[in-house]
View 1 (cartoon, rainbow, N blue to C red):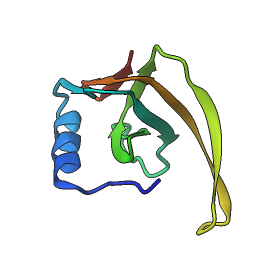
View 2: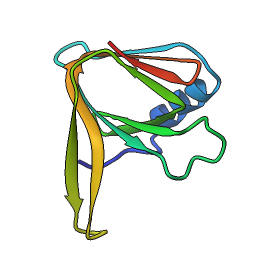
View 3: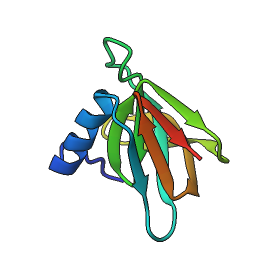
View 4: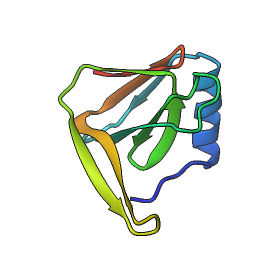
Length: 104
């Protein structure tokens, strides 16, 4: 899956997340595929976690997970290494508020 980091919509949403605004993302049909990864490049604690929702990445300080999830490892040939993340596809709604992502 190719990550989208800098689309204008994703960039605007990321700015609102960092401002602490409340944002509801709701998929009209089906569920989101969500991957969660630790962000090694966080410098101030506001972007500790990378949450990738249907291929679009957002960064938050904390994630509250109240749905089934599992761990997954994926091999990346470009880096000749594995990347490990937490995944779920059990929700069609994600709420961001005060740098926290809520998966319910």
